Length: 258
Image (tube, one colour):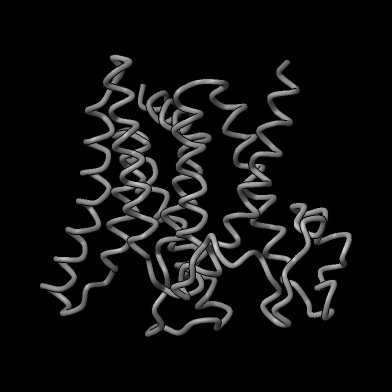
């Protein structure tokens, strides 16, 4: 039974990942994510249903459009695979539970936000606020099931509040915002789903991950000291880390104190 659920979760992740690719491409362009059907961005021909099988179609077609032969980025397959792997790891971590539902809703939103932020340095409210609305619905579910609600409210306030404080202090002291308001939305969104304790872990690791990425980009001259760098992907990578291993990291840290 467990193997059947695992396979189902993995396939669900692949299918959702395929839809996320549509969102990642169309949302920054102001296009509908529902219409027109999937098509080649080079020749404009609609993609046949048998060429839309996640990952497998990309491999079978050697990463090229069947109609015009234009190269299709491997990123499409990687997004599909990443979604499926994250879904599966989350299932292994939480089993069939309210936590699994919570994070299977959150993960797709975070992947879309991260990829768009990486591509455009923009965070679109159409994604963040829809996700926040979903988080609010889950709070209602928690309340109905008489489970914790306050921790998620505090998590949202903590996540958004820390980034807002950094923005305001940067503007006051340095005359620049330093971070974007979209980063505050992302942190608040993550906190709403993660709860207070995991939000602490997420914030801590987001700065570590962001620092490592920044050093790498500067070291290999991909960016210079004045270049803007998206912080959203670092927050989201830290959120994934917190979802999968946050409790273990926190328990390990508290154990070292004792």
